Length: 312
Image 1 (cartoon, helix red, strand yellow):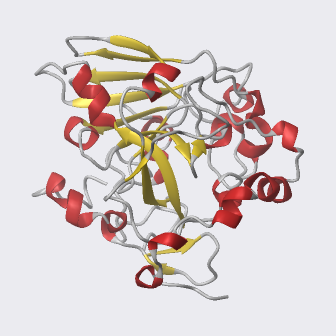
Image 2 (tube, one colour):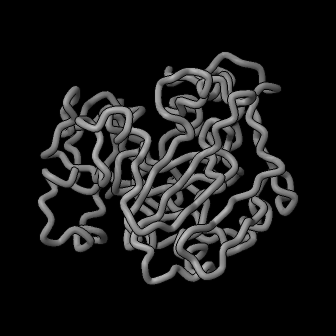
Image 3 (cartoon, rainbow, N blue to C red):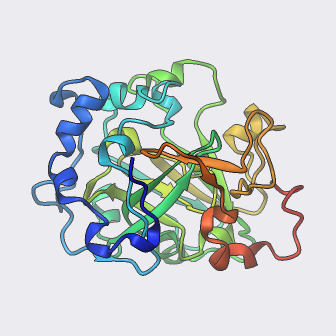
């Protein structure tokens, strides 16, 4: 296997055209299901399954993205099952139209916005981000989205707002995993307000140039690349600005294992897994885990003076 370093990759190689054009074939082979079972919800503003007028973000890594088939067939999305293949197998039941995202709480101008209007709220950018799972695997994913700050500023947070809570859909009729008592549904995540307003934090509505597949959190999800993947809530229906730190799903389910901040930190192990190394999907050898997932130069200042082993 040839493993290429980021310095060897030129921009023209970031998205393989051959992989992109054969994406559904790859997904079919990877998860063993018919193409009719793979759902790619399209906005009325999108022609032929493509997002028009997207731009490349200067915040992107130059590392080569993970193959589309791996990004869309190896996921954690417990609303559809606990196995990594379950989301691609079962998320076809998710109904993404109509879809309303509510923004409420400590804001001057609360709003409920339809997904098609949300997509038009700001110019979409391709953000190629490293993503790191607490279980030790990682990917590089070309997301399409816009800064969460754009939406939050439009509702004018009040002075008392210190945190942002994200609530995911939890429909037992369309999400079979919700019928299991694994966590206290709905799935809830949270960020400090300054984290939520950081330019790296985005709302994503697509990947690899097309709308989010259901199994990746359609129609809208959070992406916070310097934190472990479970912080990036999927299929979001509500955003609330609050005064106090939200009690997140995994903090309630396993408080000794999951803290609120959940920054990628090679020096703080999960009780069941070392975080010192990771395996990039598609590579054989492990690599060293980078502090803040390689984004330390952009986000470390947010945690100045904090004991990151205590506030994990």
